Amino acid sequence: MSLLLRWILSAFSLMLVTYLVPGIAVANFYSALWAALVLGLINALVRPVLILLTLPVNILTLGLFTLIINALLFWLASSAVKGFNVAGFWPAFWGALVVSIISWILNGVFNR
Image (tube, rainbow, N blue to C red; front, side):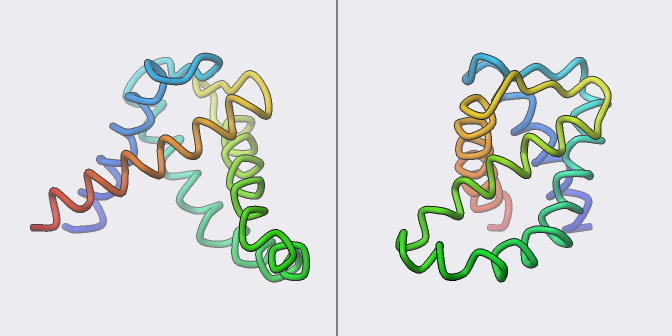
């Protein structure tokens, strides 16, 4: 049940980020569900490999390069899901950051 709740909360945070960050559009909640699923799979499968491959750069930037990786993966997810559009790198950067913050807050509230 916890996995289903997290998936719905991620989709809700994607819907909310469309109102907060210009350049990000989600057609409907169904598209947000698919985008949350794809984003979760990309973060589970691709992100650890990228973090490992960019470890020297990540160490030099004190971990800030992870934000760039998150933005690129957010942008990649938008190209894989129909109905979820990100206009460029900067909307992807701010969108990934805002989605992370919103998801962190919502997971904290609903885990209690």
